[in-house]
Image: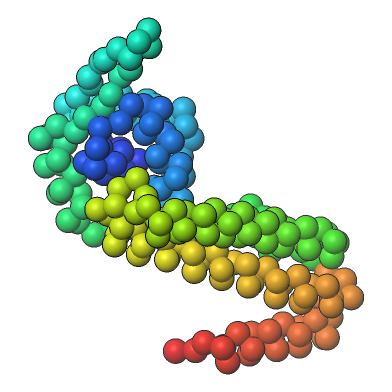
Length: 205
């Protein structure tokens, strides 16, 4: 059974042929933002596509270097089209720092703030990368100019997502900094209610 990672690789191969190294690199700057996977697994997944007849292997030599390129087959395109036309799964989110933050009463305020800092730094790094990628695509069209309209929509989702994380991290830092500690109290419960009310006032439905 093919996984979403296999289909993601077929998506990239439908744009152009890739060597395994180029595929891993391209995954890191595109699909990897929304479907991150270990590099070692990506190499094995490519080999499975070839073994299943969904991609073909082309070996060439560049000077003394041997290069293996993967190219999507007609069977691969048919399989990919069927997958693309079916409804995808909804998003899921995992973050160890948030799990730890969720149990802040078992630790210190400083530890809680450290978890918030993890998300703040993550958002900042992704926003810097997004800024660089956007300017590259604006000026050059990126590596695949014919996909610019699609790439812009995908970029905008990630850009706004990481902006939201950055805004939340700044708010959470200020909120937790004003806690006397992480323990329960009537005052902390009322502060929690006020935070919920403020959130609803900004966007309710």
